Image: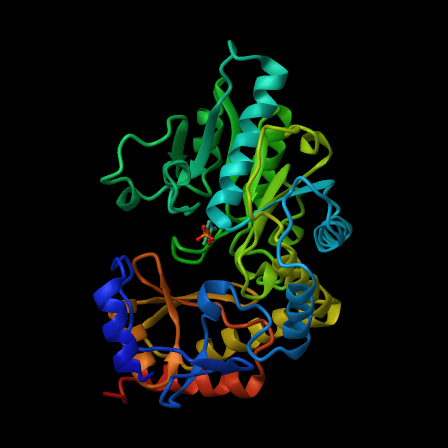
Length: 398
Ligand SMILES: *Cc1c(COP(=O)(O)O)cnc(C)c1O
């Protein structure tokens, strides 16, 4: 089918919740995508931080093909090897103590929130009412009713009332603000180390350390939403490693299975046994094909690959800064999670021009372009993509 035929079919039949670009993607190789007509796009987005090990990754494809032939799904009433092996890998490589597998980011966060509330219920009882969760302004935690309630951006608190109770949003990087809000009813704090959708806004290291300290002092759980920052994105396997703290629970999704739907959360010693049989479940969680894909992702994301993510990130940041283009107000982020805040141009308008010129790039918050390329992107592809971006920011393209 041609792009126009696909577009027509989509527009006639799909609930149009996505403001799509005028582009269809047919296939990919490395970090390069192709339309049905063969137009080439350098991919600085990986879906939205999903295709962590690129396109046409033979070993990954072989792993999921073999698993699909062998067993594509098994109920969580039974044990299965990919599930158990992936769990072992995650525990070994993070130092956390146990894992629950879900399907995506929002439902991973839902489970993490349930865990936090049950932890306090078990320990302090219903009457003490420790159920409130503090979240940060500009955060994003998902699109379900509860994770929208957790999301600290007013634009999301519309239409779908009533939202789940028990969330309060405070200014990020303001330690006095969070101290004031750590009242007797609070059971947890949820953070993103770098707020992705909010604009690629990193939390200060000292702030995170202080919050972690206050949390343990008051027996408040620190929940880290690593749905976007996790799985190598920031140059370490998970972002918490760069902040010198360990969260009580951390959620993951997006890049974990290299493009297949999988999410979940990891719990520390204190939280590993809070959820027991019957308290949480999901039909597809830990699907064997997705788990086989994830095992291969972690195999490829060894120490060397993670180091390269950090180096590529530094390279891109240095390049962007060397351009000296006034429209670039700030470059921020870590590893291959990079935000470029723009002075005079709207990010949407730049992203649109990039697409027209063969570069897929994301936006974030109100003022930022966002790069989340496949972690395996080559320097050649980085340079090709940067060349397109530079020309557009300099205004030399149409
Ligand atoms: C994308 C994202 C989510 C939601 O994940 P879905 O898979 O879309 O449900 C939650 N938290 C963060 C930080 C995200 O980036």
